[in-house]
Length: 84
Image (tube, rainbow, N blue to C red; front, side, top):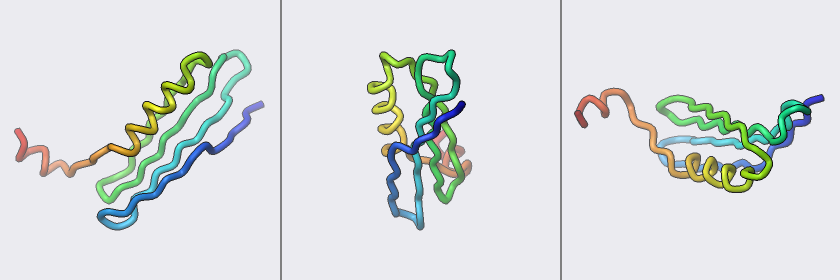
């Protein structure tokens, strides 16, 4: 049986509506830790990151994933061409 629980949601607005969602799920009885899914929607596109965390590392890894979601800066492909 899969139990799903949303942990936190934060929304920011810079260039329109930017939404992010972090979800925690117990994915399998045999795996001793949760799965975290981070969904980030920005005008440039959508980013989906999945993290499988061992129970003993869960807190630290979740904090790292939240940091990625809060500090992520997505660019358009034309912005990359100018940088190189």
